[in-house]
Length: 110
Image (cartoon, rainbow, N blue to C red; front, side, top):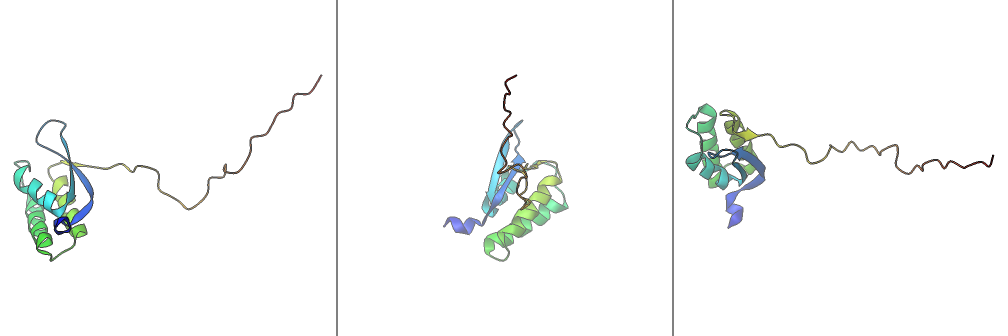
């Protein structure tokens, strides 16, 4: 039954309460947020996101499309919180320091 919710990668938005951060992880959660907790100011992206989320829940579009629509709608009133990457992007190149030993300094008697 949860697969009907059309899950996607987490999106964080600010709620109505001060410093309240809400995690949205599915098209269903996004639709509920749009209908119940959205700020008073709405715009064209908000209306488009509502239509896209409804289509997604009906099975007519992917969860990825619904996520993009929700993020764009959340950027409009400034409630979208940019997620910082957890770690730097992998470049495919090894660190040049890996596998090298530190030089040993020998004390000379003197």
